[in-house]
Length: 336
Image 1 (tube, rainbow, N blue to C red):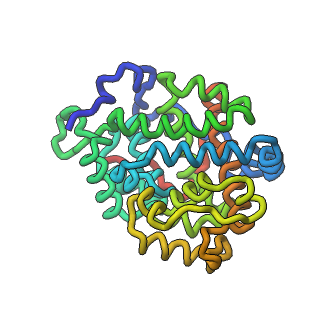
Image 2 (tube, helix red, strand yellow):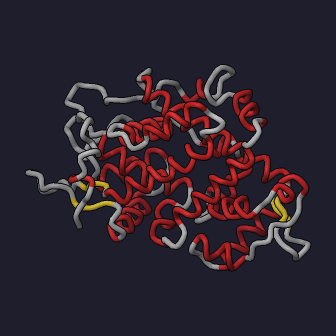
Image 3 (cartoon, helix red, strand yellow):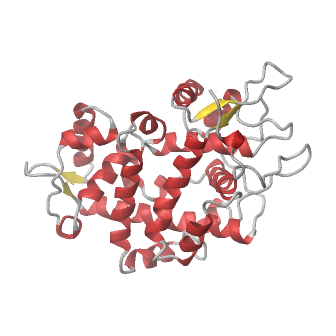
């Protein structure tokens, strides 16, 4: 299976592999604790101010609909990155390709399995299954032959690169009217350096312990289920101001939700029943799904964090104010 990344001049053209004894090209400019401190880019005050801006709720709905559109009808892509953990596996694959270890090794099954295990993302067996799906869907392909035949190096294809670019674009486009840095990032997302740098920064923060759902814990019931976050996106995308502010029912069927995430009605019903028991939705009226204030609050907080985090990463890339990260859940770099 060929890789289009290897023949795309704009992918990796400005990236220089690290040599033995040299630091990685980029690292996090803030520790995880500093991100959410009183003066950090994800400070509670910054999130509250963003949420209070006119147009924020509309931006959230635009992002939800846009993200759904990117994955609509692509069951295999949904299987790979349809929740936060699977999204990170795809991003790790990109990062491992560009951010090679001291021996020059990039993306290999062994490196990906170890990184998933070290960060608590999923088991090595689960990582292998996801990697198999990625290969079947042409999201990764075989790398160039190497002298050491025991090393099976892989490369992300243009399909995987584009999937992440389009997801970032969706968020930057929606948040650009609210955040100046998002507008800068939207103009830069196609630049040669952007994908390697953004993947590395996001993964470095993730390795150091950043988990967005720790800051919006009410959504964990969705984020930790297959397709769960896409159910949330579908509900928010179908909601209007009356549904979000006054609790009017969202008119979307269980069958439609199941179709959008490529899952069964039984799975969606179980998820919504659990969400109802947790005080997030109400299905008792039988006329639709009511989004309760706890869910609306969590969703808006989640998107505020996401917009600010991506804008922060884009600013760090643009300005180059970077320093070595504090490694939390990830061990020292491993070799395949």
